[in-house]
Amino acid sequence: MNFSAEELRRFATQIFTKIGCPENEAQLAADVLVNADLRGVDSHGVARLSGYIRLHEKNRLNATPKIKTVHETPSTAVVDGDLGLGLVVGPHAMNLAIEKAKNVGSGWVSVKNSNHYGIAGYHSMMALKEDCIGISLTNASPLVSPTFSKERLLGTNPISIAIPTKNQPPFVLDMATTTAANGKLEVLQRKELDAPEGWLQDKDGHITTDAKGLMKGGSMRPLGGDREHGSHKGYALGAVVDILSAVLSGANYGPWVPPFVAFIDPAPNPVGEGLGHFFGAMRIDAFRDGEEFKSHMDNWIERFRASETVNPDEKVLIPGDPEREMTAERLKNGIDLLEPVVKDLSELGEKLGVELIAGNS
Image (cartoon, rainbow, N blue to C red):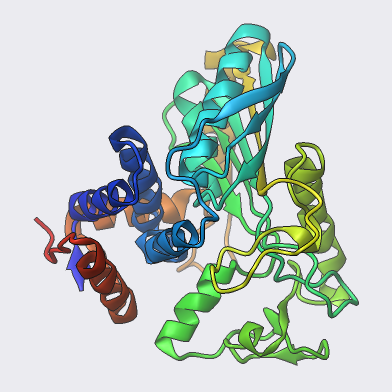
C-alpha cells in the first residue's frame, strides 16, 4: 500500500505525541523514521514505530527525557540520554559534536542511557551542511556471534560516514558490521522468504537460510559470513563500534545491551546505562581549504564512476547512490509499505486514536 512521506511523518508525529513526547521532539523522531523509508531502509522506518511504543509501555523508554552532558572538554563530551528516544538523543549529540568541530576543528561525543536511534546515516549526514565530515556509530541488541562462537555477544553495530562534495552528491557510507542488518531479516520474514547463505547460523553454530533462525535460538554472522571470507574483520569492526559507543560512554556493551524488542527483558546484571552511540564531526578547513577539498572529492567520485566495469550493463556506485536514487523515486511516487507493516500501523493507530491515510498526494 502506498503512502506519501508527509502522511507518514504526520502519523508518526501524532503517535509519538500520544505517548507524551513534546511536539518538536515527536516531529524530529518521525523525520528520522521517514527518512529511513525514503532512503529505502524500510527495516528502520515506520515499520519500527510500534516497537518504540511497546518499549514505552514497558517503562524502558522515557518520552520526556532531560538530555544532559555529564562530562566535557573543548572537543569531547559524554551525553546521558535519560532513556529517551535515540531518534531524539542522537541528533542532540550530533549537533553537539558539530558545534565543537566549529569551535576547535573536531568534535567527538559518546552517548549512554539511550535507545535505538534509527538509521546511522541520518546523524552522520547532519554534518554535511556545515562542511564537516560526519561519523555515526551505535551498538545494538546482541544478535551476532563473533567468529567461531555460537553466543550472541554483539549487535549489528552500524557505521556511517558522510563526506561533503562540491557538485557531486555527497559520499555517504551507511552499513551494518554484519552481512545484513537485522531489519532485512524482518523484511524477509514478512515476505516469507529464505535468507541468503552466510547471514545466519543456527543455535549450534551451523549456517542456516531460515529467516526465522534468530527466533529459534540462532544468531547473525559478522560481515564476511565465515572465517574464510573475512568474518573476523566484520567481528572486529562490530567490536570497535561497541567499545566506542558503550565502553567509552558508560552504556551497556556486548551481551548486556538491552534488546529493542519489548518482550525480551534486559540483562538482569547491567554493566552500564541503556544503549550507546558515538558521533564525530571534523571541519574540512581544519585540514585543508574546504572548497579545494570538495573539488577533489568531486574528482575522486567522477574517476570512480568512470571505472571500466566487468559487465557493460553495470556501473560503479558511490556509497549513498542507491539511497539518493530511492529518495527521489519515493518522494515522487510515494512509499510502498508491506501489508504486515500497514496492518501493524493501522492497529497502533486505532489503539492510540490516530488515523493512517493511504495515498501519495
